[in-house]
Length: 207
Image (cartoon, helix red, strand yellow):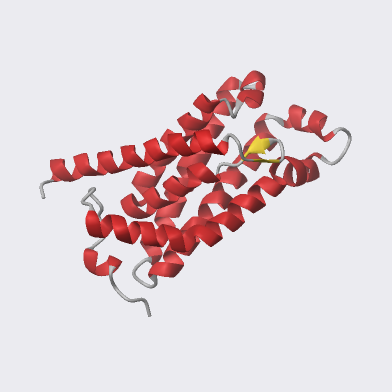
């Protein structure tokens, strides 16, 4: 397969995952824990893409998903306060989450496929939520203090604003890691989407 054909197939695969993310975003609009809708629906295609297409593919998917979040209206509260910071935060947090998830998988998959998938799945919500928390503390400090209503702003951030939302995302990603592994195996066996992982690796039995 020549390089141009490989690039086209990779782009098609990434575009397909972004399309899935758009559909899932619409569904996730009805699922809410705390003041915000969970981003689990968007993290799943992000994780699968990071595993299939590596850190670069994960970062590209993350940027695309960041735009989906902005277009969905989920960040309306923050856009009204600081538009530039909101756009920056939405794009960076998912892009870095995809990048880190892909890097972890890339470093670990030759040692143990199942652990690599599990850790990549776990890393995505941690990085995504961690960057969001830091961004809120830096760019939306005044809003956070007001939202806390006299309580400790950091406690309010991690218990009310993030709290249940993060726990649901984290637990769900741990539970769904085996499903992600199954999807990856099916895709790599039946479709040629420019995936760089060797068939011998995908089908190997882990020690």
